Length: 197
Length: 382
Image 1 (cartoon, helix red, strand yellow):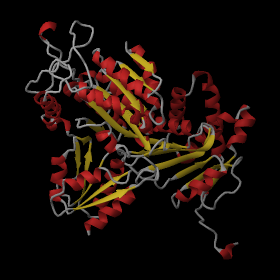
Image 2 (image 1 turned 90 degrees about the vertical axis):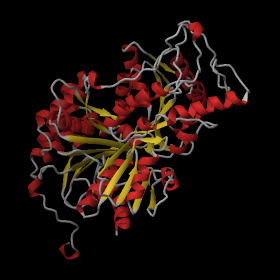
Image 3 (image 1 turned 180 degrees about the vertical axis):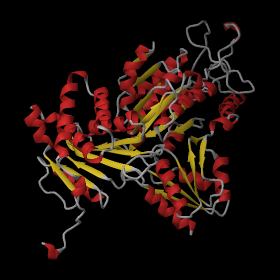
């Protein structure tokens, strides 16, 4: 959050079963409980328990929050192509798009970071289930919304005990992957002009 | 954030805050049937109630659920159920029984899109009039609405208190957005919470007249199983609880059922006034929509429009005098709702002034945005 008191909106999106909502809850808990900010976390999903769409919003502010949902997200995390296509138009003009490069192949123009979260989860931890924690680590590293130690504390409190080590390692893998990217260097090019192509 | 030392701060969902509120209010019985978007209330109470010495029962359907709630309440235990539109429809008959037999109980309806099974995972405010008039016959009932996690806690306590004090079913209308919004909640100290319990008879069992009138109109309620034997029926009854057809007894009962509520208007009809003192355009909203309205009002103020918000906490009995003072003062009032226009009818009904009442409705399963409300404020403000 650059300006003090400013409302910062994050949207996590993907398909049901990818742990989209848990990622948002951990972020909200880190910012709200461990960092003392005002937070509002909302969610919308289809009636299916797996598959279908899943979206979770986190609004973070230094002041009390009126409208609980994201209206112009500052950051959109898209964990599959459908949600990238569906929610990208809502992103703020200079907003940051973070996609799972393993599952999103057509990436819209603009400030975008592509990291293969699912691949990292599969290769380093042998399970795609922790892709949400890899992506959460990356989102926090890219935005500095909250310190990694507070994020880890929130995760430990929320995730089941026997998965604590695995989740923490996944979070760290995401942080490491995002460290290689300098967000300041991502220029907002907007849509390319015809003569640029 | 101002958290005093030693107070527990947690991230809670609206549904979870309703559970905390119910437990704090002294609720020790829940009977229900799971339904999206209300299921978390039952899920959490199934774990918490036994630990608090209470009882949780998952019933075969919603008809039985409210039946069990009424039975538990008659036995002297504060009781509640939680459901959504389809289940609330099934509860209507027994809800009428609770009104007639004056059995305190709290019914949470987390509204989703309707009619019928409708839109299970999307918000709506389509059950407002059903909450007031869903069960047949002239009957008094109290309907409260919640908009934030804090509300869910406080208003659930209020619902139990009013229900106990007036011996009337209280319906809490929530919606899928409020139910599933997580916010930081700070638990108040127990001593900060005011709890009201039903009046118990002070006379011995042989002198007890279960439905005897008094200045308050609310007879003391004896718990079953403690020696006070009386008859409970859905038929129109005399002061001893037995069916009657005598006009003077019928009239006395129905009039008392209404009088006990009208005498309590001052503490039943709750609203929240926001930036209204000098407003000339106002929004009248409730539930999750009032959060969008509050932001819209702040934004309109920044643009120089003198906007205000009247947030209705109590929907019924309709807080007429608070609404009238806004209508008298403003040249325009916007009533945004996630239905085709239910509270806007009430606002128009009580409007006797030059104020222009504009309704704004959204029925696509999405929450109304601040931008949509702001545009209407500007339209009425210029």
